[in-house]
Length: 341
Ligand code: NAD
Ligand code: DAU
Image (cartoon, rainbow, N blue to C red):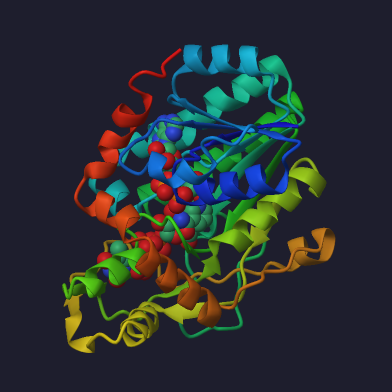
């Protein structure tokens, strides 16, 4: 199979590209990424020279470019991770979220229709379901929970999901959607809670906790998300939505304190700051459908995954320090200056 992985220089797409390249030497993996502030080619360095891997720099909103790429490459499967992904940035500047997360999806699906593919897979999020109350642990998100969004980010992702299902029903495009809970693990950009806490704690810097830190997220180790998507593109049914999550609900304060404890740092670093506007209270996924229909099982509980993650950040200081000091953005120039076709 030839698989297009869009957004593969980002956190989850990068982990997915590693998994695909190493696990399926018979498949060809092409990463397409615009290298926005969130894209980092250093994430792809370990697989860059593998014979079944290729990197292409480009924007999913650029219709002519995407058309040409599909015409030349003849993909069998497209997995779309490319997105603006940070809720706080969407509150500051919604527009780019609508462009990439909605219009970019349309451009990709139009190319899929024109050139024919076996499957278009849309990587979506639990945030499309809105939030759950803190005092009702019995409530979980199911695939048929109504869409009910809070932020410009989640509204853009929900819009994309609706468009994907419309392309399936109207044009018969073979699609699947996965909606996953919060991921953590290697190559996570240090603007997001877990890598932010690790990198700032190591530098003895204050840790900003929004509101009272009581909001709850359902944390999944990134590799478990990637194995779920792998199963869906190979065995999932066209037109279906699959929830992904591992029942690892933690309040933000619990997460922050766990990390500080494991790093041997003081809780005095915690600084309570003004809450995020429209801040979702609690996310919690019911992953029963993917477990029973496709046999997916997460490998990591939070307690184990967070240890592995902290160790990865300790062992890969260069990777995140290049982000913190901005050096990662020179990487493309350095590596690709003489390699453009
Ligand atoms: P990320 O921000 O780390 O990576 C996004 C990647 O997309 C970057 O490499 C960026 O350069 C690229 N990109 C952005 N705009 C582009 C464009 N117009 N054209 C081409 N490439 C572009 O994001 P992530 O955390 O890896 O999330 C990946 C996907 O998974 C997103 O669709 C997100 O909505 C979804 N998701 C994320 C989580 C999570 O916890 N991080 C959970 C569920 C779903
Ligand atoms: O649930 C899936 C979503 O998870 C994905 O769709 C998003 O792309 C991804 O960014 C993530 O969204 P969150 O908003 O949940 O993640 P974030 O790491 O930004 O925040 C996690 C929680 O921690 C949230 O309740 C806000 C809080 N927080 C975050 C930051 C960055 C803080 O308290 N302090 C912070 O500095």
